[in-house]
Length: 277
Image (cartoon, rainbow, N blue to C red; front, side, top):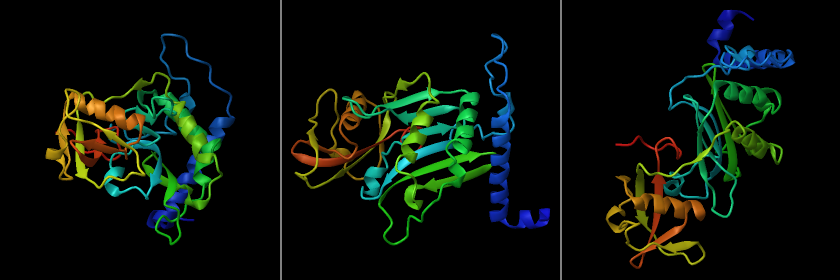
């Protein structure tokens, strides 16, 4: 096949790029493990992967993201979603720790290039990510609850979803491997403020609700109840964040006899949150 044919057909070019990456990583995996560096000479333990797995170092660039999509939830509430695991170009990491009695904790960390490269190598060789089938989300009869995985390396971006029929525990295994990239996690709380969006709703007795009256650790919701996000910085933001983490981001919030739905968006934490003002 000529170079002209490859360059003129983006589908062929993408296929060739994936095959090349697979071949290189498989060869690298077959090589003997490099000798660990002597202390003081750096922390690079996989020099064989340097140059083979690279990415845009911008902090807004998403190298990897694993996320559940629930299209039965309103677009408004989905604005506050936190992906199960995200790794950014500047080596920042945001992920959900397994739920416990405190609910789903959002953890943050900063990880090494080596850890990221080893993770992507595992996705390619151990988890066979590039050979996973992908379904069409708009297809009639498609499930409204599914998982997605995206990866951006070496100037190419790839997306996959579970609608193609993944093995039952495939997604969970990938998420657990992503979490394992982190070794020094810290719990995230929005002490620096967040975007708050509020809309009134009719109380649904079949859905969870919590009473959040105006107090020193809260703020009035009615002035914000126009559906437009507003930046709020107060202890009340942290208190509301804790409530949603311990219950559900879709929980009904009752205040002064009225019921609201509230979305918290934090730049670099929640999915597609705008930058801080």
